[in-house]
Amino acid sequence: MFAPATLTLRSYAGLQSPAEKVFQLPSRSRSRSRSINGSHSRQPSLEFKRLSVKTAVAAVDSNQLSSSQKEQSNKYYFLVANAKFMLDEEEHFKELLFERLRLYGERDKEQDFWLVIEPKFLDNFPNITKRLKRPAVALVSTNANILSYLCFNVGLAGLAWLGRFMKLRLDRVLSESYESDNLEQALASNPTNIEFEKPQNWVAPYPKYEFGWWESFLPPGSAEPKV
Amino acid sequence: MAAEMALLKPISKFSSTSHGFGSPRPYSKFYVINMSSATSQNSPKPKKAAKTGIKESLLTPRFYTTDFDEMETLFNTEINKNLNQSEFEALRQEFKTDYNQTHFVRSKEFKEAADKMQGPLRQIFVEFLERSCTAEFSGFLLYKELGRRLKIMKIYSLMLQKTNPVVAEIFSLMSRDEARHAGFLNKGLSDFNLALDLGFLTKARKYTFFKPKFIFYATYLSEKIGYWRYITIYRHLKANPEFQVYPIFKYFENWCQDENRHGDFFSALMKAQPQFLNDWKAKLWSRFFCLSVYVTMYLNDCQRTDFYEGIGLNTKEFDMHVIIETNRTTARIFPAVLDVENPEFKRKLDRMVEINQKLIAVGENQDISLVKNLKRIPIIAALASELLAAYLMPPIESGSVDFAEFEPQLVY
Image (cartoon, rainbow over all chains, first blue to last red; front, side):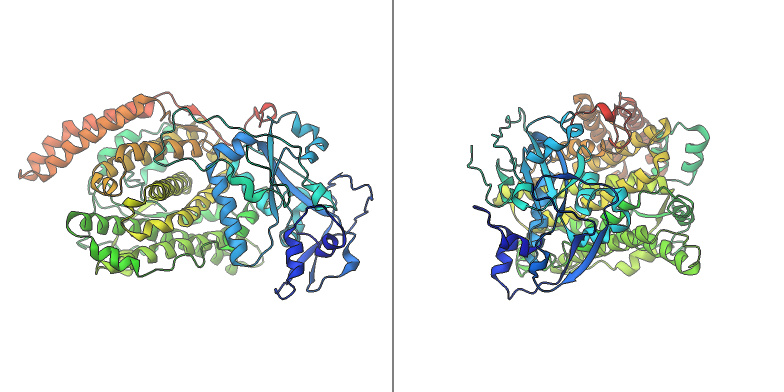
């Protein structure tokens, strides 16, 4: 979850964030808690910082957008595996994401999870990249409600609820978290072409999910042209 | 919860088998699957079922009960201080989200479709609805009771915090889903001017007793295989809408996500009890439960090819797809699974279908029961030997990467 004020007070070329949309529609009722990094020290360089375990998380209810909160660093949780696994083989993963998207639509919730293909932030995790087949795909999420909910064990868990659940489901993924105060940068990716070989003998009595289903989940503004 | 556990007639002897000999001999159990009455231990309603007139056979969906005291001990956070609560918290959130709160809303399509269905197809659909409803309802009863029992202990012993309120709540949330599914199916039956008396079923059905660890294996597989069945039917019908003869299938996509999540919960339960996953006994049991579930489904479905053909599926291909996918999923948690992708496995299943048909033919014969039983002996022996052979096929070592010793070298 982002502080919408943060988003709208900065200019991002081409970034149509869901939060921005909400800001343009002030009639929408919003009452959600927001995570504030208790010990945050903002770094103007906008570099990613590795999350230290002692990070305190506080939940604050906020019904109004306050510009005083613009200097806020968000925690991003991700799990990552190779693209073939995430986008091609694990078809139930696609179902889970669309189910969540449907629910968010039904309940007027902003999207707070994305798929990032070849994310730039991976460079900060050499321990992950050395074990990762490329191209890689990360599911990235930030969710204040859940953070506050999990604050009692955030140090232990190091993984938000969504990620924890997805990890349980997918099993063969790695997970970590980082901080960033810039959505666009947090979700930046290296341009990559993704191609999957057609399965040699597809025996299921139905067709595979269409190539490119994941485009609905790419960060705003980063939808790549179809290959 | 899907219906695929029926072949198992779990006997309380199971426990002694597992602890005593360690080597489960599942094949021999299939003899016992005659219609002898299952005494239910610790069942919620331990009244002995009188002659109720409920037609139960080898493969009908069963009701389960378990050792609730042992369950309480297993998830007692005082005793098990290292239970991975964060995984359960994550699951509780996921269940509380209640994705399908507004999903199960009927349309008038249902009645119209039911009215259109006549003859044998109508019969088949009624049976399908009945079996599905019973299976979902059996899940409801089990989860409801588990949720209740794990919570009650907490109220009685507030100071001790004896049990696990998170696990209890998840069980209750899962029983919510199952009740919803069962109710939806029962409403489907009303379109055929029928209704299952679920209150009566609760009292009259036999309950099958499973030790907690077997509940974990069995319900995990039931939920996951249920997911794969539903999603396969859904996706097949989406691609071939001309077979969309009954609107209930349109609900399967969201519906089966519930099943899948239920399976994830049992996965988390087993991870919290690694003793059920990490030794050679666990491997033998894993293979046994896989085999029981797959064979039950295959034999069941092969008796109902009309249903699957009625919706444009080839029964055996459908089943093999479901078995292979369920097995792949299961390999993420069970320490060993069957090599179902080996063509020999399907050949064995097909032979079991033939043997099962002979068995059914004997039952439908006019002979007196003594003669029938004598005729059954060689057939059951043949079935048992096929089962044993399938069980003994070289298995595939598997398991969650959270446990694997090779994990640090694994490339993702």
